[in-house]
Each structure stands twice: as structure tokens, then as C-alpha cells.
Image (cartoon, rainbow, N blue to C red; front, side, top):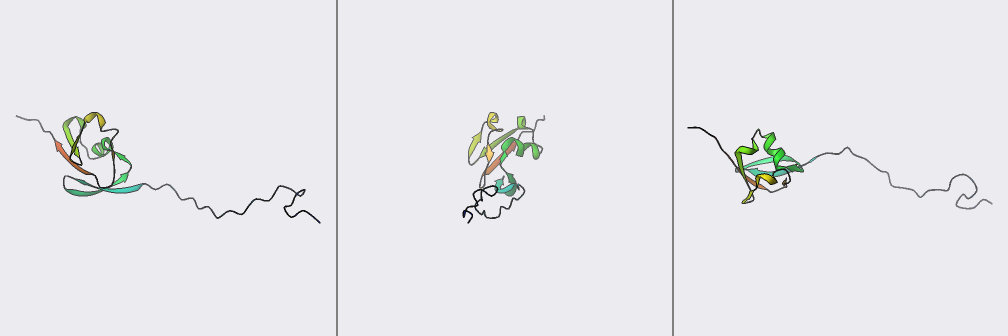
Length: 95
């Protein structure tokens, strides 16, 4: 009588696995407020990418995030998260 685990007859039996469903990666979206307007953005999104996508020159804006000024040097490392409130001031030169 053969062994119950199939020993001696081909590869050993593997335990049954639940079906694995792989879904394509989908970017999540987050809700933030920009100058009082609700916006939906892909997440994660660095502040610098948001500003570039909005067509803003990072040298000519000041950004407040959740009532704290974000240093320009931190725009690339500051990730926007759900619930963030941004206030953006754009400087315009002239005379």
C-alpha cells in the first residue's frame, strides 16, 4: 500500500492554497483642501510634484500646510496626506 503522503511517487504533495488574485496597482486618492477648495489627488504625492502639476514655480510661492509654513527646502520630502489643508501664496513681481 503506498504511503498516504505520496512518498516515493513523484514530488511531495503541497498543501492547498487559497486562490491568489493579483490586481494591478492602483494609486489611491486623497482629499485635501487648497486655499479653501476641496481637491482629490493621487497618493502619495510630494508637495513639489503637486506644485509643479499646478504650474507653480516653487521659487515664487510660499506654502502653509496645516497652519505651519513649509520650508522651500522641504517641498520635495513633504508628502501630502488625506486631510491636509494647504494655503498657497503666489508672488507676482511688478512695478
